[in-house]
Length: 62
Image: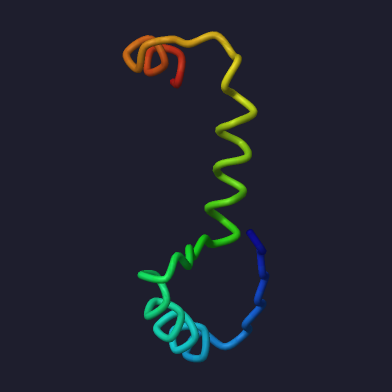
């Protein structure tokens, strides 16, 4: 697998590039945003942490 990073400053151009890339999804292309990758890295880092219920989390969130 190869990864490619494209930095596009213009939002309109970015939308056009994504539209073009969408046509290659059936060929196995996966489009992942940098934000998605960072979120996945953070999520993976918490994998071995102690787990608590959402209700318990809410009790301590205030």
